[in-house]
Image 1: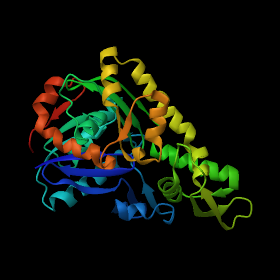
Image 2: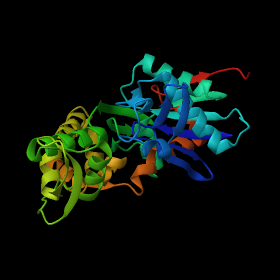
Image 3: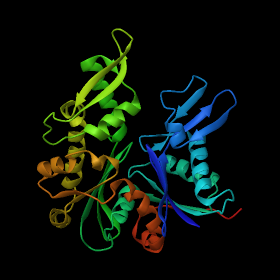
Length: 338
């Protein structure tokens, strides 16, 4: 059995070549400190964020695209694989995606987590490579293609041609930083502290970084920092714009930085082909228009951007020989069967 895993900061997705994405849940683990047992993973654990008693730790085991809690990550991956393959572990081959600028130590942590979860062999693929493949773009041709993959913990930007990455960058500015910026903005302006899930809902509902008009609004609830009592305030799309526009501009600066180091022939191809956006951040209203305005390059959102990377990981099995010959940055770690 071959499966592809998009182990993200916010979500974990598992895909199979013939079935597409078969598992899609938040990358969250709930751990009981008293009994030292994991009591929930995925959506069930996500619902506990901000609502659990002290003895239950609700943990996101990945931070900024890399593993911050190894044991919890191993448990999360094992449980998710078990749900997909059934109770009996079938020793699958696994392709896992990692951010572009990940270190060898961080790569080894991902490999070990998958191996301990029962993988026969583990392949690593960089997120922008998987994103382009999942978006249905042929990366084997001698034409420049540019992708901006905005996930939960990192934004990966890459220019590819002939199965290789020509220029790339990875910045730790993505969905989680946007949620934190919304929490900070509401706290400073309205003196109300809102939770992580509330901020995420506000982002999904109201985010608009290109010419917001303040017409859309949403009521959010939290704790008044002055009185200490529950409170409610109405946020508009202009509020969210002011909260997150600085992060959007930093992402655009990173895109410009990659374009500056792109060879001129490939830059011409990108001008013709455009920039493709993938990941959950691609759904932020007006982001494609803002990037297009700043770079003067046609920018568009891929079909079903949330699942592009996951689809690309399972499609990678078709191209393993090509990838291993043509990708210096794709590492193969083989383990003998137990």
